[in-house]
Length: 211
Image (cartoon, rainbow, N blue to C red; front, side):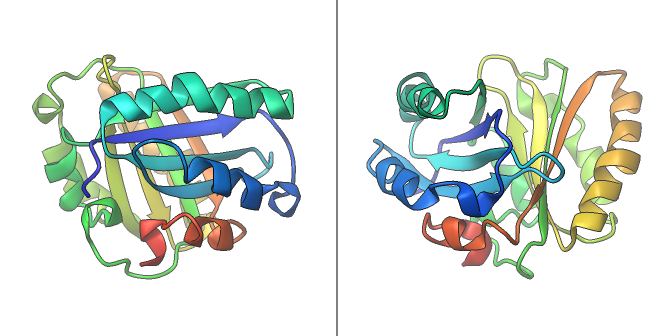
């Protein structure tokens, strides 16, 4: 079943991933209506915990972020971040970037992930500059794939990237991406995550990065 929505989550905690009760959380998330897969995230430098999820419908994704996920944050006693993205609007752009969410075979196991979001309103998504950016992105050292993101209702453009190493992911977030945002004259949001520590938890959730 193809996804119609992506969800990004992050909990405001600082806990080494081996202390996160991911097995119990996975069992609960698997029961959520419309859930397809999840890639777990563990923040580099701050040990935040989160994920990028695929859902079969926008409605089920919305129910997840308004119903289930706030209860998970309450259980940890922490604040949280959630975003819902239109997965249909970004299909063509993502396929061009070897996105595993749209069926591409992973080039290698990821060593790191990067999440980005730019404070712009780009609707419809296809009117945005992804055709100009994709050729440049493909040249970034260590980039394995990108899934483009388009904020539900907001039209905020962003992406979920897989890199071969934390070093290349960090360089991208600190050096390349601020320049891209400057070209767009927009504020931006970036996060870097260690993919190696979350592999087992992500495999248990059918993450497409390990197909």
